[in-house]
Image 1: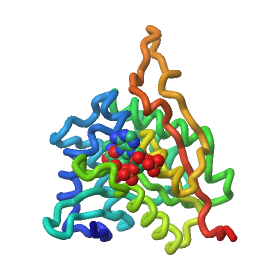
Image 2: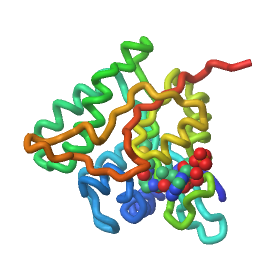
Image 3: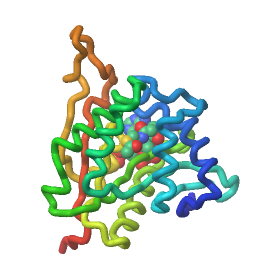
Image 4: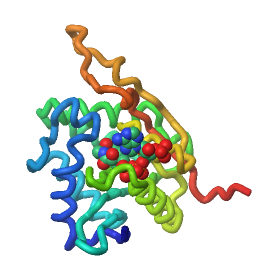
Length: 217
Ligand code: ACO
């Protein structure tokens, strides 16, 4: 497998990869925001915005050139999360609110900017591996390379909103720690129905972090 930064000429191919391989992310699979192989405007708007930041990495098959996996990385600035919560008020899509409402509100609760006295956080926002290449360590490699990039750029904190047990295992293997764990089963609507019916092993959404630039001896 080869790895490379994702340049603008690959953005459309990355979007097509995500249309095919990201919909089985546990939260999306549960609420049904994006359907396999169909455009998903609300999520793709975020994806393109993140790609334009120029920090994303892809794995590709060197023989066929096919994209095997992607890590879409971006920088969150102090105040962005509050803005996102405000902007969400103008969006009517229930599935979007069920996913991004959970993410933004949980991030708001723990205020990593205040806790670490920083104004920027390097975020690994989307991790996706082509289903035929899964279980071979590609996500782990994309994650490790993203961490190296974050270090090189001088960020002090790396964060991932890990919604899947598999992405949590990758993050754990790289020494990330859980800043907050949320049990999907704890959320019910006004009729007592579970909002997130997500099957094991994906029982928790975890905000996972790592302080960068701290060498261990
Ligand atoms: N069953 C059991 N364990 C699994 C499975 C599986 N189907 N797939 C991966 N794992 C485990 C691996 O064993 C490994 O754990 P270990 O180090 O303890 O052995 C860990 O998960 C990661 O393995 P990788 O091979 O590096 O992961 P992979 O390349 O298969 O990609 C990913 C994992 C990205 C989660 C992939 O399954 C995927 O694209 N899923 C759909 C989208 C998704 O859920 N993305 C993550 C959401 S969170 C976010 O985007 C920030």
